[in-house]
Length: 182
Image (cartoon, rainbow, N blue to C red):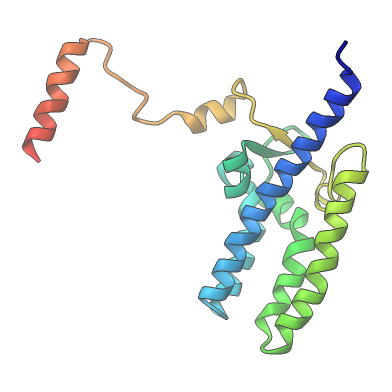
């Protein structure tokens, strides 16, 4: 017989680990921006981290890669820019100190490591699976539901729209014609 409690706990643990992977991707982007274009890159990184969870209907680059989205617990809509700013304060505050050379990097690191550890601790210890930023901004992270209207709109592109009057044979010759011109 299958232990359902174990399976449920296991899937929740996997979801939490996936959230960490998504945040790690975002932090990697921030580190690359900060190091490659220092000191201007720190401002770019701060800007990205401030708005990242309000992009693509509540999906930062990391969350989009993993398949998650941030929504507001107030109304169920995708995370707003204000909520993104609030929910990422535990990352942006330490990052802001990195602008001050040379001690800023040291202060930033000394603040960043405990904040990330606190966020990770809360993520795994709270029954809701929320981190400090989620609690502060009143948001939550959900898996992409293909039935959500905002995700359906975001996924539609001009590639998906085909002319129904065109037969498959005409599409093939049109494609060959087009590629033959180039």
